[in-house]
Length: 320
Ligand code: ADP
Ligand code: MG
Image 1 (tube, rainbow, N blue to C red):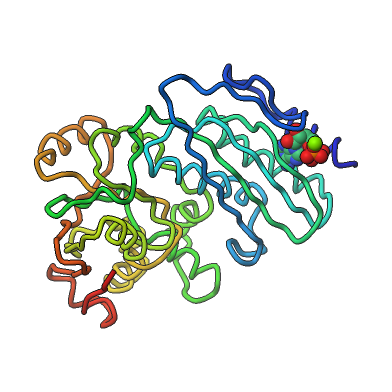
Image 2: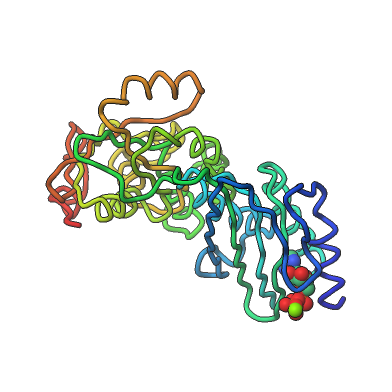
């Protein structure tokens, strides 16, 4: 199977829903897109390398799903509507059943969010997947990392730590009961990009980021870019029932704070908007937990009865 037949069969022909704003998709030297007036275009790209960003044994469906999910998560983190993607695929060999499963994982998620594959590149080499995602935001409304102010409340979506715990299981570093494992593995392999939440947060959040490297690290980016600090209420960290049953409370908190791969959103809400925001997010049926507050002093501190369970390296304070 030559390169062009491969692109046609597993990618171009799999695009079922063509967006009206795609003037020209896969097939020419470039794609042509109509960008609606009054909107700003947001671009992001992420590469997943086999053996580095996912274990070599990962199913091709999951590899594609995650490669797209992590890019959509970046768009969600700025409040963007995802629109188009390109795919640069480096393959060690042409394996048709592998490609079929990969393509299925990619289009399952792309179709869910009305995102169209508009081009890419296909090369031979060690397995690596680069996706570039493009999204739109009304002019001036993108939510940056730099907008947090002292007194703002800190929130996260859903729960934290499951993916990092599941990864330890896959790497043979801990054993999780089979009955608890499935939802935790899904969080690792097929994270849900929080697009809906990101869009709802436009006009509310003063700063936002997605959690790819762990809450402490990623909240740290908000603190650094906003030149502020934070006080985290450890007792309020949202933990899934599976994580609570799978490991000790101390390990669960450690995963929630430091493990990567959550792809939840962390954002800040100005104090004067908190009451209205809490009512709004409840009304919208969103799972969002308030976990602390932005402080003036540029350090990250922990409070709460469970803070004594944190590793000594965290219990002190972290400077940014
Ligand atoms: P060029 O040599 O002009 O860069 P290619 O031969 O690499 O073009 O690609 C032909 C067409 O197929 C282009 O429109 C390109 O965007 C698209 N394409 C190549 N690889 C992929 C892929 N993995 N997924 C989607 N589109 C692809
Ligand atoms: Mg060309």
